[in-house]
Image (cartoon, rainbow, N blue to C red; front, top):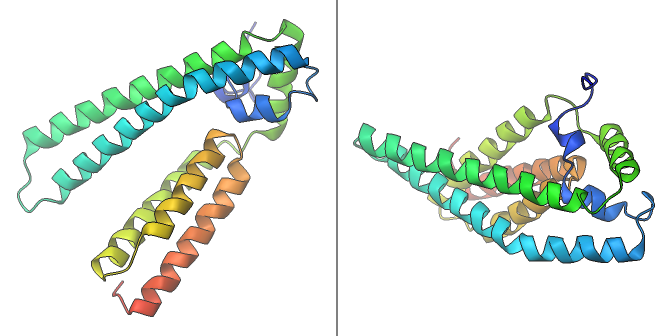
Length: 194
């Protein structure tokens, strides 16, 4: 059976937060909810480890790209390592989502899929997130160069990351917009050049 046009990988494998927040609405009994929570807690540390490794490798790539002398071999090596880390992270996300969904009956999985379709972000949301994250990165670099502190920005970006991981895309986008506004305000206050 071919999937309908509005269905995406996210509707078949929704983020854990969608399932966990809507367990009662989906008719998931307390025992199954407990198994799902235990599975999630068991698998969450590995996810964060893989995520940290990906972010660390991304920073290494950015540092290499920012160097005065472009070392193509080093850049390619960093890029390969980053792509490998991204692949590991994505495959682990699929594993976690399948592990959680396997605790449900076929009817419950269909209900989760329908809920995911109704709450799914627009098809082009990823590009919007990417451009906003890049803007945060660029503004953060300018603020750091002007002597400003990034402690609050880093804390807020962890919140944004958690919102997206929990499937709260709308909240995450609003928070990203707020971070951008705060960074722009901080840059104006420090008089940093654009």
